[in-house]
Length: 88
Image (spheres, rainbow, N blue to C red):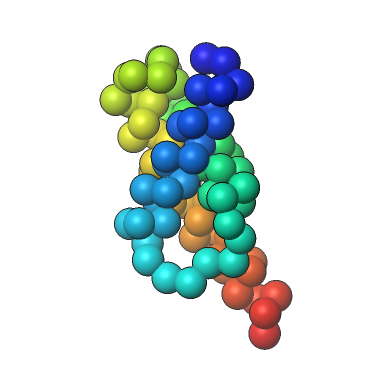
């Protein structure tokens, strides 16, 4: 996949993760894209380590989107814990 595909997957996976976990988040569109891209990488790595599958197959593959969304939710949880501690 190209860099444009990673950015699009990151944007949509980050938006879906934020929709699944409503709440006040610092950061805008760029932070959402970064959370989604890092989440996609994390989800792909976890899929390979835990299940032994190549979960990053292509842009239109369901496993790619599931891995990116699950990874984005995990990254968003970590981001909220770190950002929440800074604001105190």
